[in-house]
Amino acid sequence: MGGGVALSTIGGVRDTDSEPAAAGQPPEGVAHPRAIRSFVRRAGRTTEGQKRAFGALGPKYLLPYQAQPVDLASAFGRAAPTILEIGFGMGEATAHIAGLMPGNNFLCCEVHEPGVGALLKRIGEQGLANIRIVQHDAVEVLDHMLAPASLAGVHVFFPDPWHKLRHHKRRLIQPALVARLASRLAPGGYLHCATDWEPYAQQMLEVLAGEPQLRNTAAGFAPRPPYRPLTKFEQRGLRLGHGVWDVVFTRTGM
Image (cartoon, rainbow, N blue to C red; front, side, top):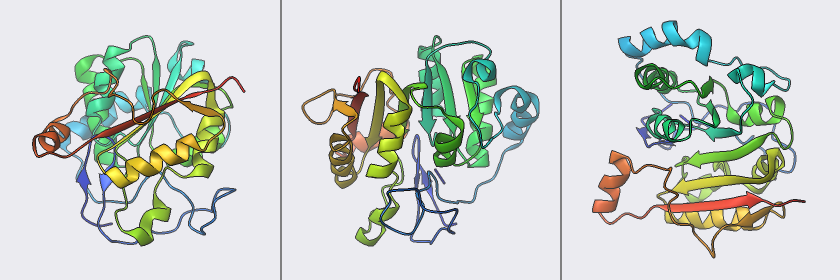
């Protein structure tokens, strides 16, 4: 999820007040004129190791964007429960979770080239075979590549909180997008969001609670599921007294 100076978190970007360029048309049901996107543009340098990973591993693990449903079994070389990750930053948490869950497929969306290169490098170093990366806006991937009820889970970790009130409309977690995410989940599938910005956490909880296809797994915020690792960034924040909030909802049988 990645102009301007940005600080990477485990799955998203903290952007400055720079104005991202408009892209595409707003999705149906969104009240404001700017289309929801899963990223903000940011600068970054791809290292030599990441470049080598692109060349050696990209042909196998990079899945080209296509404006039509993808055959997930063919893309991964097996039929298995598939989890979509929106914005994986530098791939630290993604690689950790994929290693913990070898029986699941992970379809991971990120537009930031150094982040994609970093995850490819981790795939090679850790021998991970259950990840495929789409270097494209996850909202378009969701709309065009994924069939209804095709996902076992969705991870949205630390998306850009867009702190200023006038920018809240740019936040990724909005009712229209959550409804589409829910529609791609199979019954019993889950949507897991995490943030270290409490006002955004409250919005996430309200938006997900307002989606009739979803049911909260907790009375409010959820305990951190054991598969989501504490990264160095998060550990430092916790030492400084910063909170982290997890929201986990499941798809009903409707």
